[in-house]
Image (cartoon, rainbow, N blue to C red; front, top):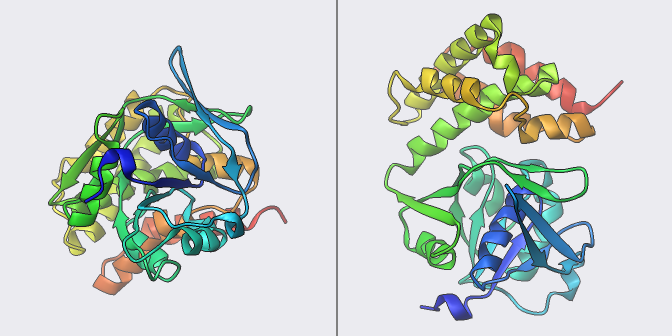
Length: 298
């Protein structure tokens, strides 16, 4: 097994999540290869008064990659997997571990077609990072990821050991992934209202949020997730206790006119609900609205 010192690492997609992971690696002397769409000399993470600069360049041409890596963090959104396919092909060998830092519960199914040679590890990302207008990333909390307890996950755990990014190897990974999906699903309300976390303080929005969470919980349990009755209120409370200006990636994409991750965050609830014969009346309204918003103006 390779040690931290000689493990080659790449980050594909140096957005908010990718930049945070790249900074965590750089701080402990494991600066990764940076791969993305936009050429940049460096990445910048702002954590309170501390500013971490990750040296580039950000590579933009997969054809210039002349070797595979041991570990690749795929940090592009689900709407950008097609665009990342060439990176995965260039970076992946039979032993490459690909850690998929994406929302949802379908990471492996969606990425597998683009990476037939790599060993895929889904991840649940638990940290709030927001891209800023100057290209930097603002980190607003501790950095933590959850992974399934597998041999491939140990490669990721080893690479991040000692860094600001803590790793949880979870036997109940599916339950954690569904819990995060519930959180992401109700964050979709921000994209529809163009509002941030402060809106959850409205009694009508908090009531809708709680009802939607109950609907999502029923589907999650049918999928095998072990989540208690208290989870919906806990998630709503988290939004209520967040800074009023806290946003989410789907809101950022809506404001920028980019396609939305509506299917993996919200559509999945409707799809899995139908498969189990579970009514999803709130999803049936929200999903087409998010899909239409994703299409852009006009």
